[in-house]
Image (cartoon, rainbow, N blue to C red):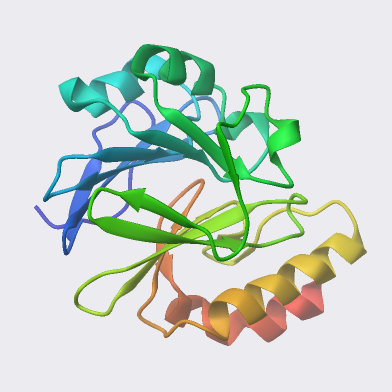
Length: 217
């Protein structure tokens, strides 16, 4: 089956391969959060991005292989509601942005900032801090062997706009960070995996940046 990135709460996960990294997307919880299970095909090591909700479903997704670590993209509760249960069940290392970790009730075993790396077996994810939606939200970037970049962006970027902000100043900060750290750096075929809803690409969203700036959200 072809990966679409379109998942619904209560429905099946969607799976694709990106070189040696297998990406499984599952929607969970009342706010339809996306959780991403990343598995190194060479070593079997697994990492979960955002233990958002429904711990039983997430543990079923993880299976018997277990989890090496759980990365939380930002401090908002809907992205870590199942973190304590998953950490207790798997013993996984907990990872979060160093400026958001204090807003997460589960202690972070490791805090990261721009330039840090998070490993998934033989694969490596680059950490990019993107400020505005929260003080220390992080994006994870994976460059697959075919040269396609995969960005796990939390709530920083969606199809149709950047994430929610609570002041004009925060919006200006967020769209500036998204432009300079993501759009200015990565090509149009870069695949974007948001914290809610469908996937997109930087190419699909790039023409609309001036429109987003003008409307202010």
